[in-house]
Image (cartoon, rainbow, N blue to C red; front, side, top):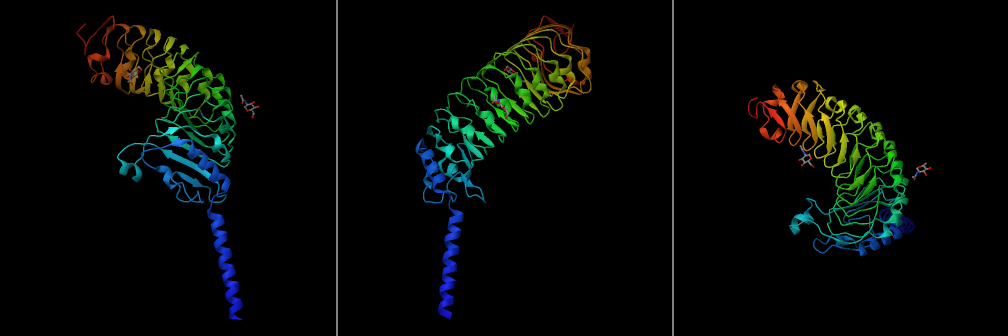
Length: 368
Ligand SMILES: *[C@@H]1O[C@H](CO)[C@@H](O)[C@H](O)[C@H]1NC(C)=O
Ligand SMILES: *[C@@H]1O[C@H](CO)[C@@H](O)[C@H](O)[C@H]1NC(C)=O
């Protein structure tokens, strides 16, 4: 009797053990995809891939994590700049060469794909990445990735973060990007991306940060941007953008930072910009002309207002004294003339805010 019981018990234990190991190990196909991904990369200093051994890729593989329920690989999170012990022990930041293998596209449950700040990873973004339906995060910042943003990127209906900044990416912004209706954070800074900003960008209703600076973007600023009502930070600086600043940008609900510096923007400064929620406004080094609108009010609160290196003329508007705050002001290198207003926003400003104009006078410059 007790013998039968024992046999039954051991059967149950063996069954449980095999079940739990099945629950805990990743599917062999995911493991094979990870190993193919690893084989295309070379990380000579830290040994982050040394942990990528054994059958269970969900367990203690550095930077890999799996979905609790499906046990499929859900996240690859490899950052070359980190405070983790493996970096402290090596006393250095990460460096990795090689390329991103298209084998990652076999990880069909991948939700987050971060291979950031490794400085040396080259090659292109595998085009098949656009066919990973669960992808929420693509973060490839700080490598040497070339090629283009995959043209079918707009298929990624769940994508919230697209960060490919600080790489060598060229080509244009794909039209399909406007189909990324979950996108909250777009960062393509410091690449070689050219062509216009698609007019359809206004469809990205969830977008809160659009950082496009340091590329070769041309064309005009699409009016439709002002329909992105969650947009808080718009950086189009250091491009080849021309045409006027849409008046509608000054009417956006939460826009706080607007950087348009170092472009070929012309026309006048829209009245709306000076009397909006924007607190960080850089229009420096463009071809803006006309007067600075006399449109400041108590609503105007600027931590930084940089209008330097344009063709602005006339006087500094009196209403600027009624702004609630002007922290940093740069009006230098224009054609302004007349008395510098007095008042609390101006008391702390130095001459450098006003130099290289036609005939400005008064404190902190010489008396009129
Ligand atoms: C955007 O999505 C719509 C609907 O899903 C589709 O018909 C259209 O072709 C897509 N546009 C691009 C450029 O991918
Ligand atoms: C504004 O942009 C110019 C040109 O890119 C830059 O030199 C300057 O530091 C910026 N101003 C502020 C206040 O950040």
